[in-house]
Length: 118
Image (tube, rainbow, N blue to C red):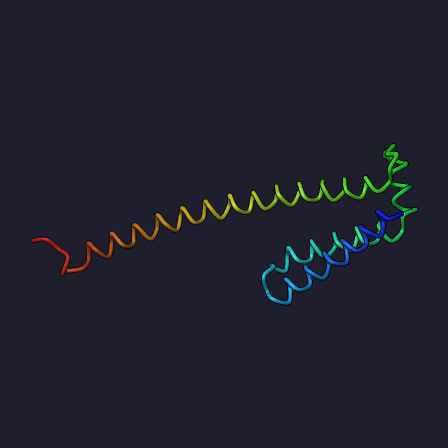
């Protein structure tokens, strides 16, 4: 089937991009491993359509390649949720750091004799 060839090509391109991002240090190790594993799993499912067909049969899906895209979609949602929690945590930390810097600036201004009023 042509869809399996397309998904194999997509997985290979995806893995090359992940490797390139790792090489250029634009992707953190904890995320690169996750993306690499997903790319490998998708490639394996694309290379062995019988395995994908068995999974589709278990899920009562008629068109097996749609399971491949469904799994990719579910994984994407999980990653988006995880990254949203990471962003929220970083936002809280940034707010806390901004508050601490403001307090330190105020403390420094209060201690600086040049800025003291008599």
